[in-house]
Image (cartoon, rainbow, N blue to C red; front, side, top):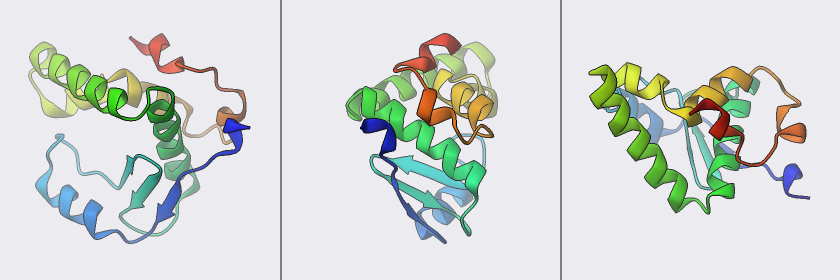
Length: 120
């Protein structure tokens, strides 16, 4: 039943435009998943929506707040290890899973819980 869940998607989000200008993570995001919401910088993009839906399930399985804490921890570890924000972002196991599986539109139907651990 949970596999049928999908986040609420908002197009042309000012939130993403603002964060993109800041470049906080070392990248310019075009979408952000926060809880049950996905904010897109532009129009709908199935691959990007799938990427963010993967993040939604990562958050769901960790009761949201624990995923945010772990995400920040992995990012900080990446900063120390790689000495660069972009490399820290891309080395995050949550991002590794989402980027690797974003093109597989059936992935969420077969995804095992806590699959991000395979990318540690």
